[in-house]
Amino acid sequence: MCCKGFLKIMMFVFNGIIFLAGAAILAVGIWVAVDRVSLLGFLDHIDEAPSELAQLANIGYLLIGVGAFLTLMGFLGCCGAMKESKCMLLSFFIIVLIIFLIEVAAGIVLIVFEPLVEKFLDEIGQEVVKTIETNYGTDEGFTSIWNSTMTELKCCGYNNYTDFTDSSFVSSTSTYPETCCANSGICTENIADIDRVRGCLTALEQFFKDNAVLLAGVALGISALEIAAMVVSMILYKSVGK
Image (cartoon, rainbow, N blue to C red; front, side, top):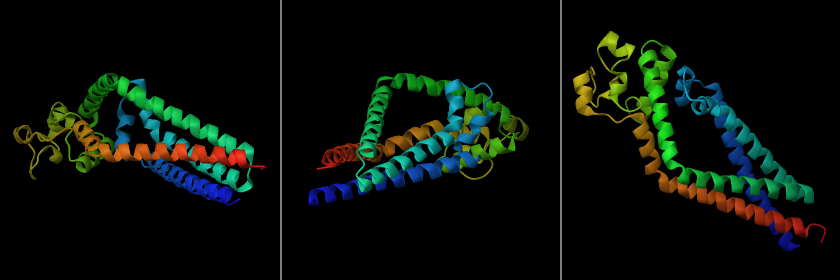
């Protein structure tokens, strides 16, 4: 009896964490979907983007779906433990198992197809550069998005300052965005060439490299939590009715 009570407490703890994580992802998804002045907002301005790239514009809705799913899953696990419902506990176990297998498969795919990911990023870069040349300096929303992104990441363009060379902004002002020069003041082509501020793609790659240990730790923590939740739910499932 004492063991069953402990298992129930563990189920509440695991599912409470899952519920809170789902609620956080749901909140982020709503924010991304509502706030168009975000890093992903520039995708709306790419007319000839690859189909995979165009789908990234809907990432806010994807996060909403994932967040809502995790929230409901946490609620299902708590109800199953509280009511000692074998149906709920088994459903919870199956759902967590499916998610765990998908995560493992996704990790394997990323490792095996890493060269394809790099090629995909190159294709994206070509479309982004074309869009910068067309819209930066003429489209207020697009310009604001890129300025916010470059200021936040301390970068210049997708690759580097040359992405702006043929843009309407440089043609009309003969200057480059301020973030393309390390020193404050008027940013000319000569200064931008000397300073060589890194591109935003490089900045993002460096961010992930700097936080690789943290990201790996989070991934391992989530995997351990999922395995523990499956074990506890199955033990509790078998103990119901005894």
